[in-house]
Image (cartoon, rainbow, N blue to C red; front, side):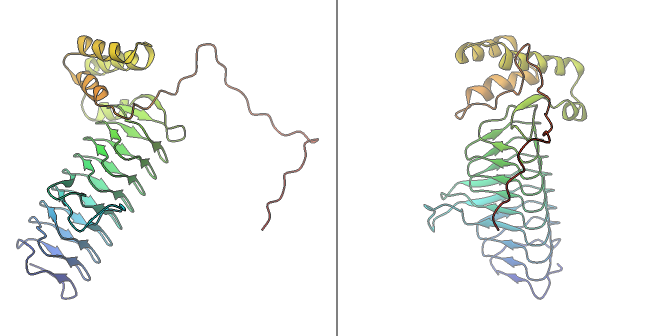
Length: 283
């Protein structure tokens, strides 16, 4: 078991023979590591952290740190990481607020540089969080979702499976499964067709998802009637998830970015020579 002599490892930590721990790593008491885990330098695994097998943690990763919450006490929950995950440099994952609760990360995820997962978040499997993604507390990210660089997600929001969120979006409502979010407007711009194709969804399934998408965003039905119609029209198949997902939306869902009928795109007007020169900013 290659443990660098400059690493600090608690004698109460559980380490199988196949782990690798680099210099200046800190493994606190009660930590459990699965076989095949590899920790580069300066990785910290705090008390209450459980890792599955074959995870690769790069320089500066911190897993199981205390919540960034003014009401956090010394009695905290834990952090549970699945198998096959890649956590790139300076990723942080904080433990749950209450004893017996967990911040969780599934299997085969990729969290890129400076990604942050706050307390009580639940991240599924095959998820990508790109550089500087910020998840606030109690956020849920479902399987195969992709969050691009610098996306911020408000606490208690959910991002549905196979959704793709564009860079620098500010997610303050739930993101439906299978949709594409524009990063500039943080609005829905259609289905994530590339992701659906790569995930192996059939043409018939995509057609069903399109019909459900139009029902949700373009039917104009009252909310309760919309939920009823989703359940009636899509009782099975991938679109069946929309009824349950929408019913659990406590913060509402992200709206669609769509021009009303007859709207035209306004052209940018260049400044004329008679326009006043721009003011200089002091300093």
